Structures are given as structure tokens and as C-alpha cells.
Length: 160
View 1: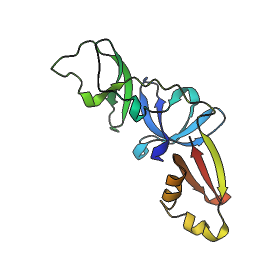
View 2: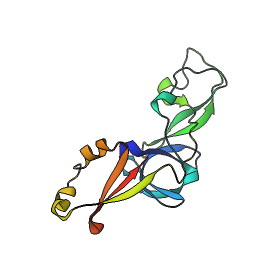
View 3: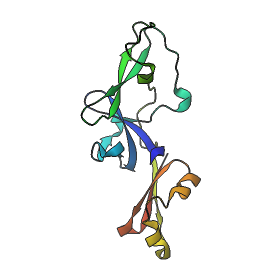
């Protein structure tokens, strides 16, 4: 599920990390690390993909728009809020580990994720219920979330 990371805009204007677990017509179902928030549906307009490794930068300049890690209580979850660098000095007001360049990824849309079902043959249905059993399959087909839906006897895949 880590491969389907998304960032969700909350009412406090901070983007929080989550994982896409389902896709609907205009919404995406998102779960959160350590179940800090319940699995929730969000409009596409409130969800974006996180920065990729090649989008990260450690060089910053005065007046650059950035994002600062906001740690919330009591859940100790964190979100990213917009900020502007006013001055770079030797004395750190915000540590370098708590800043990143602005996420310029656009919001997701109906073409960001694909979902499909794979029928599970009857002779392997019990085996398919074992937690983590799908890891090798997941690696083989790259970034995806795999959920066994026992009552439908299918593997539900969300892929981007």
C-alpha cells in the first residue's frame, strides 16, 4: 500500500499523507498511517500525489515558496503547510528536515488511478486470505494496492 501514497488537503490547509485504497467516479478512498484517521472518501480536488525523489531539493533561497512540516497533537501525525523563506541564516528557526520545496503536482483526476478485479480461483482462496501473501505479485506489477474481497472472491487492485 505504500506505493499508492497520496497527500490529502484538510480544512487547516495542510496536506497529510495517506494511501489510496479505492477509486470512485469523483472521489478517492484514503486510509491513513497507524489509523490516525478513519478511512475516508475525498474529492479529487483535495488529493495530490506526493513529491517524487527527483522533485526534492535541498537548496533554498530567500523568498522561495516552500512547505513546512506541521506536527499535530495528540496523534503526532504531520502535514505540510505552505510558507515562504524570508531569510536564510546560520541559526535555524526551522530545521532543514522539516522543510521541502513546494509540491507542484496537480490534483489527481479520473485518469490518475486504475482499478480492476482479478478473480481468485477456488483452490487458492484460503491461501489468498493470508496477510502479506500478495507482496511478490504486488512487486511484479509495480505500484498498486491489493485488497482481497472475500465475499466477491476477487482481488481488488488500485494502480497508478
